[in-house]
Length: 107
Image 1 (spheres, rainbow, N blue to C red):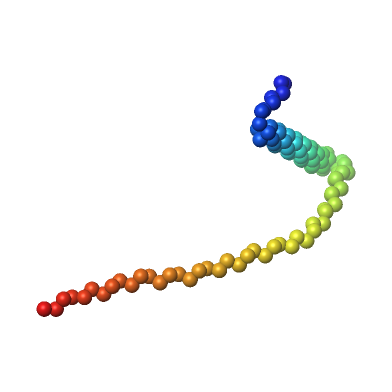
Image 2: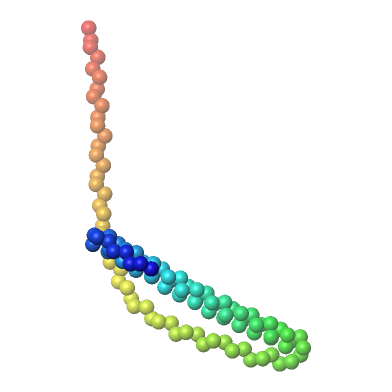
C-alpha cells in the first residue's frame, strides 16, 4: 500500500488516530471471536458429557467421569470511592407579573 503523506500536520494526526482506532477495533473483534469460540467449545463439551451420561444410563453401564473445568479465580475489585456530585440548588421562581387593575372612568 502506498504511503499517503499529507502536507498538514493535523491531517497526518487524524490519519494516525484513525489507524489506531481501526487497530483497536480489530483487536476487540479478535478477542470477541476468541471468547465466542471458547464458549462454544465449553458448551459442546458439556453437551457431550450429558449425552454420554444419558447413553451410559440407558445401557446400564457406569457413567464416565465428567471433567469439569476448574473455576477461574475471581479477582477482587478495588473499592472505588465515588466522587460526590455537586449539589445543584434550584433558583427561586420569579413571581408572576401582576396585571394592572383597570380603572373605570366614572362620570
